[in-house]
Length: 176
Image (cartoon, rainbow, N blue to C red):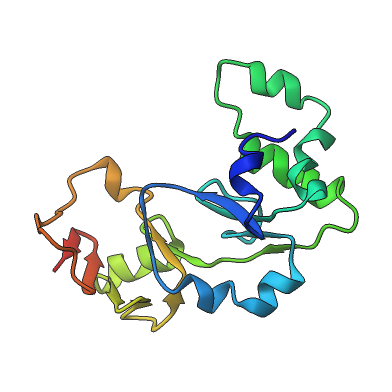
């Protein structure tokens, strides 16, 4: 038995993401070909990330966590142990033969080196325009933008009744 098994039974994939994300066109990055080819999809190149991961909904993938010899101990420990990132990355990379995983940089982030470079040199702006999330300086498209550092400080967030289809993210916050 896996947690939420009854809720997941009708879905091909399940996943998780952080609340401090703005999503662009997810299907452009996780298209039918990618979903057919991979069992696990991570939003970062080096590890399974806690801010975005998708898992194929089948018995093998859903039970991968059991391959980690300390999973029960970690789950019962009161402190955060980053099991979804650190420990599951190890399981997927080294203890899951036959599991096809995609580790790819799909995200823009205020913690991202390219955003920081633009911020220092030119300022930066990422625009959500009818579902496409584009870095206006580099012209890169992102699947999502992660407010990694901005949420920790003063960030301008205009009050609106209806979120528009087009707005920008800058080093200062949201611009409508």
